[in-house]
Image (cartoon, rainbow over all chains, first blue to last red; front, side, top):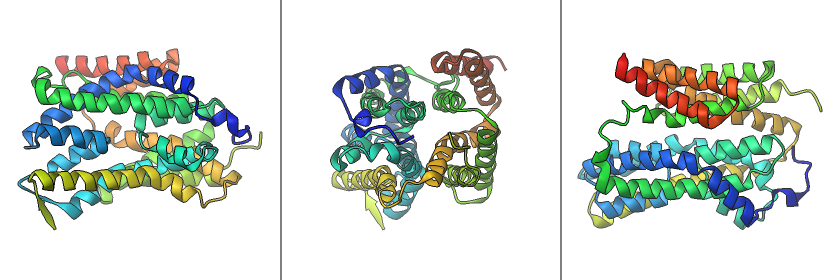
Length: 236
Length: 103
């Protein structure tokens, strides 16, 4: 999976534009998420400029919503930092899974691309890399599309947040879940993957119930990874 | 240590959040740059990328409401049938919306 020449994984402008366009449909949903965040943040007492700055610089929806739970006249900094780290720790794993391909880029570009890495663009690009295609355009172009959508949505939420009264009754809370599931199913399906998924799901649930909050993604992913390292695919 | 949410305080809080998040975005590839990518590490990484998705979804599937579960079922069925993500996601959202309106 890393035998291709480095040029196959270089960044090119056309490919980034294609990736941008490919993530546009899902970006529409991200605008709605952003809208919900902008509205919730306003209700928690954040001012408009801070909301837009936060979405621009942090760009990690779940952790931003979690921050709102701690928001008040005073915000406890250390608990906030720990919460944000725990919710976003999945980025560490995403970075690690991308490394075999990103290592072909010069370090500045490698870290530059990672600035906009997020669940949806990562999932699309890791699938593309897995098929032997370049996912670099999806990662950067798609990441930029989602980033802009998140900022736009947060800003819209300040002004038009009331337009969507109840996103849950419209099923909009399920967008990311359904997207993730579709991505998981489009990957390879065999007995080994099924066993890995089972271990990942069970350990995620155990962590969800018995370990500190927000640890389940990391625990489940590492458990699945360990099984994959022990039960290796047959050599091609 | 608490910070007051004055104009400058809020900015400091946002910068801390941004710094922590950036550390998670950069930390994974930074650590991996010290790990030789052998076959076993490749297999670990490959297994982990599917597992991240499953680990995110498992609590949603088990603890979610009926609408959430039906949505995931509809997505899975459509995905297996059509092998196209967008119709699968649309089917999931429509199912969640419908079941929450009707049930």
